[in-house]
Image (cartoon, rainbow, N blue to C red; front, side, top):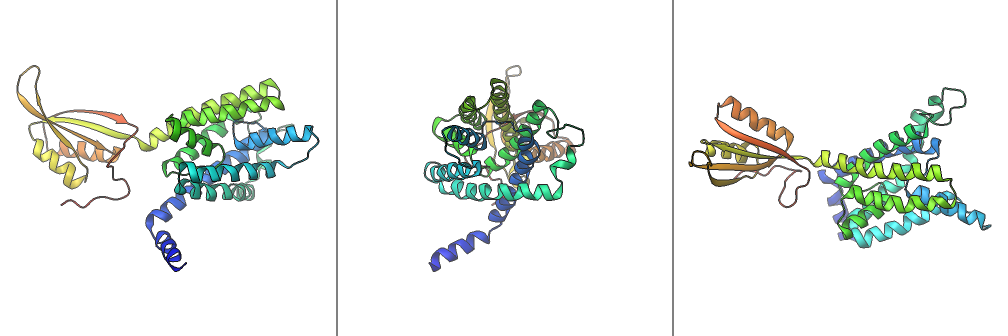
Length: 311
């Protein structure tokens, strides 16, 4: 027991823990705003565990069994959390427990900060945007930004995200496609209680959600792949390694026009590091041919949390 307590204390005392704790809280704060201000007032059932719970509760009610939607949500989330723990990993499951637990309280906090009723200013207005399509777009964009932030640290908003992460891990779909597939299956269950029009709106919202998650995820993870051909290869190489603290690869190449042997440097940099490199080349008047492109996924040795000390 003492060893477990000491291990837990050592984890809590790290900067990584508090950084991820803040990120999860911020991500769920954003998600709670999306649900509280756009999903609940408009009553749109986008492919989510909340929507599936409404469908199940409706079917059970038609069968003469009364059960609260909140109870169904709790049971489904509990089952999915167990699946996440065993199929995805302990880290994902533990983080998702925290995010799933704080969604409700954060929605109440938003109500204390600025109640929904203050946004319903026009007579007969039933939702914030007073139009199901505008409510849908606002909800999806805000929620997708939250999901992208959480997926980046191997966490989620719970529910549908757990299913999406399972599809992503075992079927190797992009995370946005995984969200779309899992959400579409859930959306189709709404045919049991909702008219065709509302089901179609939910399906479109789920599809847009998948696209938006991919967009925000790519934006958060975007890197610059830089290729530099110059006579001052060593100076540029040392700057990348010693000042930017990034790795690089130097290739020997031959000019197709001149036939001269040259060296090309390739490196993956963040946007800020790329700007610093361009400034260095400009300030030092280095004659170079440079190409750069965006890379949205990087695997292997990539140090983002800390800088390595150059040896």
